[in-house]
Length: 147
Image (cartoon, rainbow, N blue to C red; front, side, top):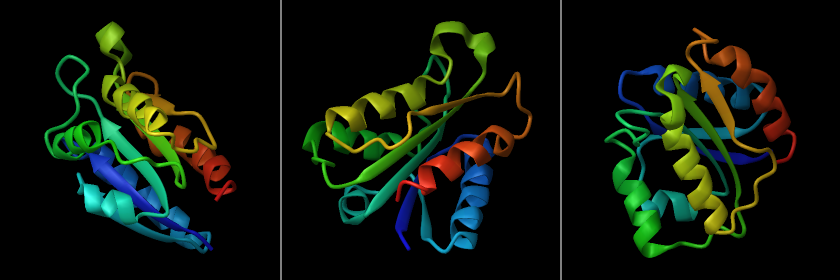
């Protein structure tokens, strides 16, 4: 099956918890999955399939732990043409225009880097889903089926 690298941006642990559930599901489907807290450009470049799971902080900002990777991606511009990439953004719609801002930023950048996007970004609203796994599970099944 496929190898998946999961890059996580988290402030308070929700994205970390979701990444652990996603990893477990991918492994149960026969895939190899590794979770990176933030991660490095080298880990991204060596990845076969990539999943970003990030919460949003401040005014639509990326969490501190994933900002260095995002900045490296912006400055080094590694083309992701040969990678299938998925993005799950976590946020709170009560914040209006900044809702899932981090996920939207990552999504825009990976598209600019020519990643293959088998399933469009999933935005999970904390106002609607206390447990992010509920909306993530069906999305993940669609994404994993494309690997």
